[in-house]
Image (cartoon, rainbow over all chains, first blue to last red; front, side):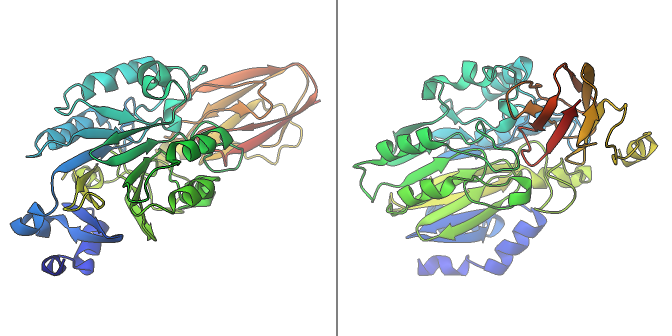
Length: 313
Length: 100
């Protein structure tokens, strides 16, 4: 790791994040999670090669159907995102969409989103719904299209390249004034799913709303996430991915790395700024830098994952 | 949008009893709330935010779909009682209707 230390300039990485610039690369190795300026990493071929083959790309909050001032062309920015993914020299094995595929759960929005996704060179996509995907009266539009993997429950797991993936739903059982909820049934299912699994298995958990409390007054968290975390704590490498807040926020707790992704549609304010999490209007030339994707690679040892955020500009 | 907002004729809440049967979802709040109406009144919720909102009765009595900007949802209250509701997208948005 000593070769990498020259890259790991926290100051530069933070500068990059503050301006939403070219992107930030996150390396998780042995439980240590370090941001690297993506432009610096790109200029350091040996270091970049160590990132390994991309495992998956996270896309989030595409909000197909949104047409307000904050981004009148969400189809266009999703399309640019897809071009970015398709242009990766090593194609990721999987795409994970962490919800809010649509803005208003309308059939036409889901249909258009699915049509746009067909342009991805990587065809295997795993999804979880956001609260914008479940506002139709019967809560069936999402499940009719994406419910098969979870038998219409919204939560499921699968394995790929030695990594165990768990998709969870925390947008249905909302409580007035409260945060997202996983619920007893789902938590019991997770316990069964993890039972007997080796602690050395890398785990990736993904859900729409943050599985850690980022800002309670805006509902940016999940009320019963602690009961999930207590089950995950014994594992050596846990990566928790969310969307919902349309910006990158991260933390490390023991062997667990928490990361929320940018949206491909529109940015939202930093927690507590303004009356609520409304679409944030920024000058057109700044928008692309505030949208983007997260890719995750296997780093050298299969128990280590690297997260890499890329903005559209 | 700020200019549009300023031009709206909007009477702030205070309303204990009123003939108002419109509740605005604006700046992530329902207003007025609580709203008191007579039995048989129809209440209309209108979304004035750029972000969609919903209206879902805590007791499961009524439920809107996602309301985009300037879209509305109405429900007729025949029975006296107290009705609490929430936006399922932003559960901190809560409101109350008292039907007399």
